[in-house]
Image (tube, rainbow, N blue to C red; front, side):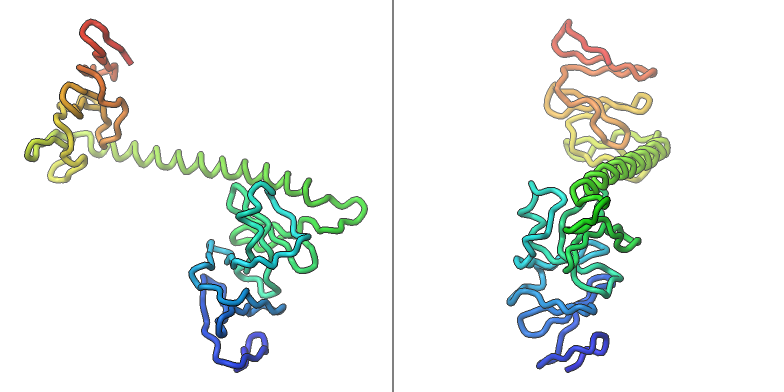
Length: 259
């Protein structure tokens, strides 16, 4: 059998496994790449041990060269045992060197060259095992990449959090007319015919502003938002909510905490 893409031949018919835009051939007990430079996995590898991460495929492989350097040596047990197939790269199979905070990765080719790979951008040369005079070494380049990736990851996280907060704000505005309802011995919150908070509380008071008092266990009161998010745990003897949002929490008779 001949793979028309690579012109390599096999003694038995290969089975094609697809992961996104990446394809491997299973022949007997081994996987074979369809890259220009041939790669054959370790013998007896189970298909479920291969992990696809959207733009690259990790293949367990203990034959990683000793020259392969890691992004974070502390995590070597995780990253020093994988080969890596890059989506859209038909050149060869690489060795995994580690993952950065923004989920981009660093890989090494068979010649000891290192590349930074981001989703949708392909690989970018960054260093090698034998740098020329004036060329930055692996450690210094990776340190810069880690800082940059950390900043990007924080920015993405902030944006995601802001989007979630905005979606929640709109949701709370939409359900501002929720009311308590009872089912059996438990209370929840309803918006028209739609259940917003399932009936799982001992008691829930009429909302005041954007919050309502609820009783978890007997004489243990807390405060929740209209979408059921608990903002004050139920451990107070009494809760009073004012229209301006001020909350009075009775810890014991005569001792009140105001927030």
